[in-house]
Amino acid sequence: MPRKHVIGPSPSAVEWIEREAWIDIYEAAPAAVNTALKLHSTLIGETPVFACLGIPISELNRAFMLDDLAKPKIDDAAQWLEDIAAPNFALQIAANDTTAELQAWARRNHFEPFGNGWSKLTKNIAFDEEGDLVQNERISFTTDPDPALYGRLVVSAMGLPEAAQAWFSALVGRPNWTTIVAMLDGEPVGSGALFVKDTWAWFGIDGTIDSARRQGVQAALIQFRIRSARKLGAFYLTAETGRPEKADGKHTSRQNYIRNGFSEAYHRLNFKTKTEDGAS
Image 1 (tube, rainbow, N blue to C red):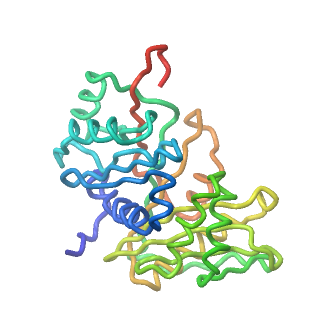
Image 2 (cartoon, rainbow, N blue to C red):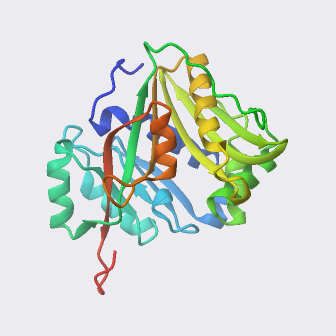
């Protein structure tokens, strides 16, 4: 069923497209990758939960799409993660009044916010005219990349183990996905992905290799995907980035999105359990 044409602050309204993208990312993994990285994913009610023991980072070991209105089975989601995911898994809960009950539950059950959290960014292009694309003659794109090249760029830019290369290679040519390689002076240097369903689009898997950073590659990838999403019929765009340590601080990836018309709908806290020594 198509989603209503509205972006609100509720995670259950905004994060469903992120859920659909990540479910498909896990389903795309070849059997050998599943075995090597110990991948698991499922839905508990409407809540997605993901585990990757082979890469123990919160991005791959988490639950999200959590808010009080949706009444998620938070106990079951947390237990699933405790049983199956890496120990530093996160319950990603928006830091606003739509999650007051969930935040209270998390604290009662010995979860605490860890780090700066993530920005949940949105952009509504339903009524926007297409702006001029910033021209950079040094940067070009392909949306039909060699799968092995795409996978190599993702793991190199994101610092992932080599075993993950085949995982992200498997997204090339998959339904609903546009996988993009950015080239600087003809050399492949960056990657990005776009997942479109109904009238929504999720931007993710952004990365630029170290030697090409600060040369406009990521900003160009964002602009290219905005145009691609529009052509594919999307009106509502979402992405996630890290957040600066201070409210008035800068975070490069976040600033790139904001400069291209995205705004922070809310930020998500990463609730993690405390270990015996007090660390999360």
